[in-house]
Image (cartoon, rainbow, N blue to C red):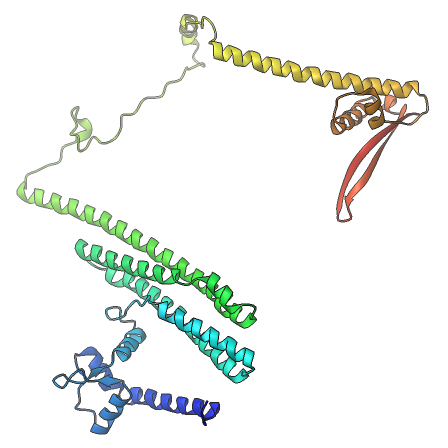
Length: 412
């Protein structure tokens, strides 16, 4: 910084901006006349006012032969404020903004490392402004598309104009999507590093806003397709009605016939598929019982079952018999365990120890389950002859589930 203090620069910037905005308000009528026409009328402007407007770049003169016109940025500003869809532009060029944001981030990090806190705050403010401008451009572009769908596109009478507006809107959506695709959040994450303010601004906040823009663009596309399909449907109906009106003009005595009473229906009218009448046996009619019995007796009996079906049935029966045999074997082994407890009168016997000593091939879980099930299946009088105790623990301090590790049985 040379000589001037930051506060002085900021004050001078605000003063100049207030003067330029005051110029816009003071000469609003002449500027709006220039917006509506080709040139700005000079009758209501003095030479001093004209020179001040030219110096502020609100007006400009393309060449010596041309009149005074609005500057392009001022014309765009008025179009944005008026939501004039005939002059608003969908600006999806974000490459330059992203390059400026990268430069500002580098300058911000250098100011932070050098301890220049005022410059650091100013650079962070500029970054916020650039992010807001970027989001504002996307939001304005999407808003312009919505207004166009509800205006120019929604109320165009000719199909060719409708298709042209559709293509234009689709191309603008593609340009917006291409602009959004240029924003690489992996690059931003690497660029901002561990700085919390930059990460919140360029990663979390920007990503949330861009997600909203993507959602809005999908809604615009859905609405665009819906309007186009609806217009084509209306167009086909109107063409059918117009064709019928032209036919009636050429044949004023035409009377439509009752096609429902005709045996030979024209192919244009006979579009429905033939209906097959559904039939069912009326079991409540006693008079037809004899007839139904005869029909049942006449039904052909299957000579033999097909080999694949018979093989599948045999396999299924074999599998069922094998499972039943295993269940019976498990039940018999558990019964022997109970008999062993009776033989060891008064001795406490562990179910898992018995399983290991007997060298059975059952799993510990299914064995304990069957021991408990056998005990619960005994009559009340016989259950009193045994004392069954489960060795269990709680699964965790936060879970009331009990885990059974073993079952011990004793003769009462």
